Image 1 (cartoon, rainbow, N blue to C red):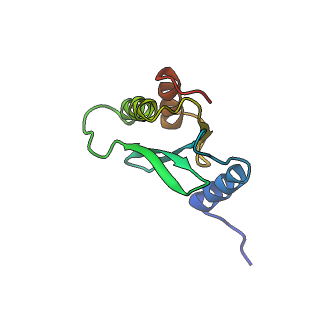
Image 2: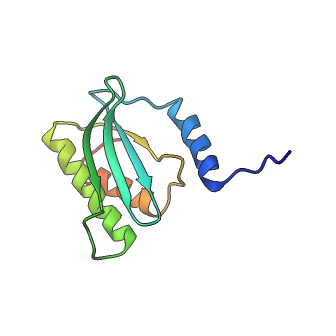
Length: 116
């Protein structure tokens, strides 16, 4: 019997391990980052009510590299958080390595005024 797993199954397992420790609330929501092959997405999530407070993606962006578009997402999500008077968040990298686009979103969100 084969126990081989795919890349997505491994990422899902890593994400489940991380999510067992991380919980977002209304005062300190979870900043979840997801990256597909084409696009990057970020959401501010209140896990106690199960609602998304803010979201940003680069689907409509067509210029720049993927990393440059990811920095724009970080800036956008930080602005949306400020409008809702959210200063602190819990970062959820979604089982991805903290490098490249995920890191770009996190650093730009920090530069935009979010603490985590």
